Image (tube, rainbow, N blue to C red; front, side, top):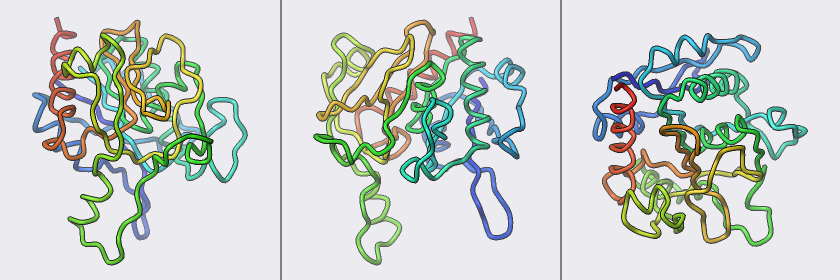
Length: 253
């Protein structure tokens, strides 16, 4: 089976790279029986990719997270400093791929920014700065200690930070046989108005939507946390990636 994974654009010295964090690839390798194929973002924001052709060649699609945010013009809002940083090339590629995947009912898992993109494709919108809203937790990436080494940095950034509650008789409750779990949190933005045909599968204690499912697709799930991080240290990741693999296999028949 072939799993498409969307890339992000990243500046590097005198050039720009197409990149995917190795954590995604390690999680896919550990829990899925697939061949990952990286899909580059477009080279400019106006360039269109042949999303329908790409999706027709895949057995599943993984929409990765990224530090950049979806440009607010895609959900009818005006740009402000709170919305930045942007990756308009990623926007163009990812939104087209999500639309084509929904049209072809391709199994899809969206992570963090990917979940926000899925929501916008389905007609929803986003909160720009969640931490500025009354009563909300600070869901942003935690600050690092001074002179932190790589191991300390990873342990700090990707540590479980708050609990989510799963929808009654929903996807995660049935998958994990539990009502709640601890998750990491690395996002400034989040779902505001829920998109059409999406249902809420998990919420944080402050009411933030943390997971959604498309009700008219065979398998289309979005999570606001990063299940590819610390996959051996929580109850969610192994089961989630394995079930995504199961859905891809069933879709072949």
